[in-house]
Image (tube, rainbow, N blue to C red; front, top):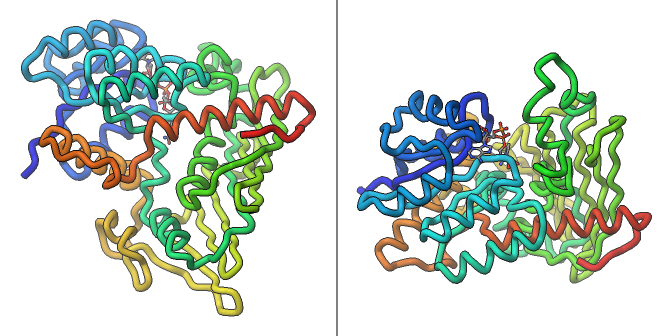
Length: 384
Ligand SMILES: NC(=O)c1ccc[n+]([C@@H]2O[C@H](COP(=O)([O-])OP(=O)(O)OC[C@H]3O[C@@H](n4cnc5c(N)ncnc54)[C@H](O)[C@@H]3O)[C@@H](O)[C@H]2O)c1
């Protein structure tokens, strides 16, 4: 059995959302052990969170700088750190740990501007760091299936791509409402200093964009975008509509919205080529629909007949028992675990792994910045 990877975490303290998801995902295949952390921007809350999680006192840190420094001096130091803070802290925290030679698992979006991304890409290369970005939807088996089908030519040349991620939780200004100063997750997501220049486009539009790139591998050439803040007084977009021209002639459209009433996490992608079409929706993720032109629509089930090896490789339980968000996240974690243990054994081969990287993160921020540039010049076409 492989030795468990010693994981540290920054962010994910009491009341936080995604840190707990990372902790669960890291344990699903039993490849990691959480041994250290600086869990909150508030030192007391950080220590209380670590205590609750069973972190030993000497590795339960008040802040991430102390953690990076003290961990680097230990013989049993962490192998990697998971960064699960709001966006504006990804860059400083990642740089502090890269500097000490630690591998990184960071949530999206990578940073708050392209300059920060370029610095992260450079530092990662210089220090020979594995940097995984948790665009978790790439971990779903039927997304792997869709990618494999595109690669083996089942769709023919791709013509049309429609991707959307719609939610409704920011329909009202919950960032300001309530006596306690508003919903904290909404507050940082709608604040340019913490979220970056993109609101909804950065928070969920980047997932849709990343899925398009992951499945089709098509390179964007130009885009035209319209970003809107429908809620009065909100500084960042809560709705984004983007048209994309891809190399090779395909046309794409990405819509992300956090004011689309009736939608919870409606991430959907549809891809149409000369020979066939694919459709997948995150709220029903165990099924992928494929239509070969002139034939009836096929429903391909995760783990069922017709599912490809790329999907079966990341499937745990039989068809009909749903797998979803946590398992998809775990597939990224396990892929990173394979990369980390290969690295430790001097057996690392970047072509073997499937997880999104720091370069994908840079592309996501470029997607945000180009979209903002287009939107602020009356949706003119801009080069990617
Ligand atoms: N991949 C996904 O599906 C997904 C889903 C939700 C959020 N996210 C991303 O995860 C990140 C966190 O989002 P969230 O919803 O969990 O936010 P959150 O507000 O619920 O939690 C953020 C946590 O980070 C801590 N934190 C802030 N600054 C810190 C610092 N300097 N040191 C240590 N801890 C610090 C906060 O105290 C809090 O515990 C964001 O980048 C977000 O875009 C990704």
